[in-house]
Image 1: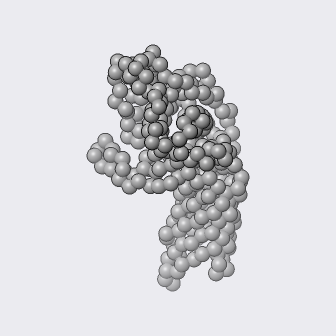
Image 2: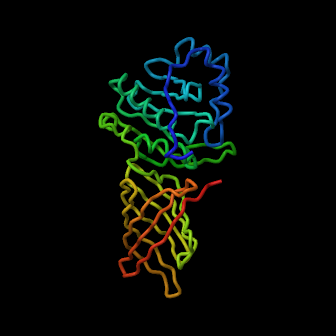
Length: 292
């Protein structure tokens, strides 16, 4: 599914004891190395829901209903601190259709309205969990930090997480409902379709709101980075990289603009026109790479 496909109908409801079985099933069925299971047991979770432990002043558990069917759950903890943290789990069948961003938007609307002292709603995503990062970005959450070695993986090694937050002022301004106002390049990789003297060029994007950066390299190019503003379908940027030719290594700077559009196969492509400050210029086509 892609951004232009029909959006699902999404709403939240408070979990009740009878939900415990399917919540545990979703939790276990969707667990991955990037999002481990919570380790719940049906009877214990049913008792906690019956006692109201997940509908208190400090924490809430929500059932996510997509097109009329239970499809996941969301947890919000630390409401009394004013700096609450959320987590979200969705069934694979509803992913990639915009359900995640809508859940985040509805969570923001409910908790900022219901908790006057709440100032921040935060969440984290594993550094390789691109779909969750894109959901946060699309729902107006700002990328605030990279927490190094904060996530212990199944093999015992540690990975990094990205930290996101939506503040009360963001919510007051409607940032969570504004959308990306155009394309979302966050987490996407683009490759040069037709090779030239920059054969092998690969761009990896991060995007936060309209601000986009990409790191790149290619034949003779190293440590390249571009940064710019994406407005609807046009990215205007500045770039800097090292040109490692037979004549030695030189730093190159310049500017460019990329037109973003969607191909018939659903992938995005960038029609990129660039001009270096030393006089070189060119035009190239970059195509979104499907990650396996």
